[in-house]
Length: 214
Image (cartoon, rainbow, N blue to C red):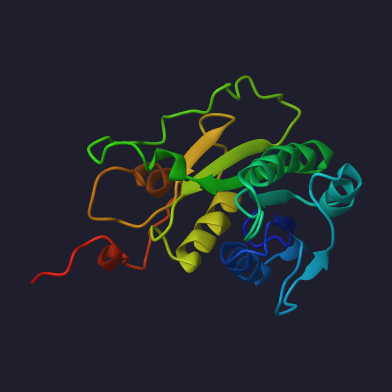
């Protein structure tokens, strides 16, 4: 947990996405934010390089209390192999070089569930395989967030990151949260984020999920 009101250093990796920019700007209002990549508006300090390069990761995480890694940030034109490599090796590089980290937040996508039938209800109890348990107690507590297109506004997602950094100890060393608005279907659940993070989506996106009446 990062103390409320304390100025701490947070690394945002993958900030070249719209979501990353929103998160970096939102957190910069109260924290010392460092971006691994570029920030078009120059609002936060940046470090050039690739998270998979351990020298770059060591420099970027030095003195940081938390890292927010946006896994789906390989950029337009990147192959699926490149995107997966950046998401996996980049995350491992950042979490293992960050000597002062107390929390590591990984943002990824729920797109892999899009092929499931609409009547399937997918909550946060699903877990990746191979499992992440047990987690080395010497490493920062990882938190994984999942979302998908037209499910949450950038502002609401950035606010969830702010609350995740402030949240007290979680029930388990590896927690999964679904960050999405209150959509007009029950395929995904955001109940856990509301309960443990005290997060509440403010922007309504129902219009993207309902057909116009004729």
